[in-house]
Length: 423
Image (cartoon, rainbow, N blue to C red; front, side):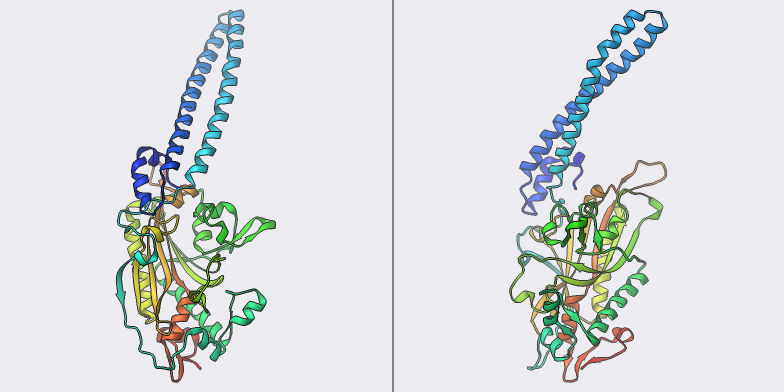
């Protein structure tokens, strides 16, 4: 959530920056400023009335001490209206604050100045491409056919048990999943991330804290009886660990990682792009999260981006890095880079990671602050990235490494899988 003080000082800048996200902020900004004017007026009236009441209270005490009881009683009686005014003004301010909150949460995060303009994914900026797509033989097949051929992923039974988008991993398919999870967690630990195993159900406050609510409630699975949501990513519970906290500056940066299953309704998704593992309702992912001081957050974003690129290099997957345009960014992000791997059998790029800086957008919602010595607490910056999401990694590994013997396992994964081929 954007800070009210920032909106009030820079309304035109907020409107201009949000236009990069193709969001017309002017109507909401105008309402926010109008409500805030009312709040500030009520605050001044409240302060003035309290000052009058305090002054009268001192005078009443002095009159009683001087034996002027009748004058004191008369002045005391006159304070009744002031007390009623104070109650009414406090109620008005509370109402204004609720209205301000309701309007402020409708505004997306302002994008970083480097974010390119654009409305669709086709307008994202490709900033790096690395690796060579393998030359597959004429008999190469997509991963969903490989999964059936080697009996490692069962899509049909998943439909029977739950529905489309809930596959069953079997045998070497299940072992490959577990190998990738352990590989990603080990690499994160080596990079200085503390492993967290969080709950996979969150409450509304947690969803609000990281910006999923009220923006994306329709994309999350909801347990109505308990008013809990299945997490769309481990980012949500891990970042919310620090909600309502004031961290000591010496404890920063915070670097956490965690593996969880993730759940997304993906409402409205259909067509060839959702075949096989391309788009699931339940999938496994290792997430990395950082909390930084503002001066360091964009250096941290570059470090996280390079860390994820390093994972893709080790997996020997051709990849590219995109800077998302304003129209393709999330509600909460200030700057996002997507990582895509090339899927040789499908002949298309598949997104496998997003790494984002949210600046103070999430921390303002969560009241996550830090302080140095006796300085006033200030909002921290939050960042997160997929490192990595498994489904499309598995799809690319299966397709790109197929040969006459089966599917070759990348060398660095063999100690985890305990096998070199799927056949």
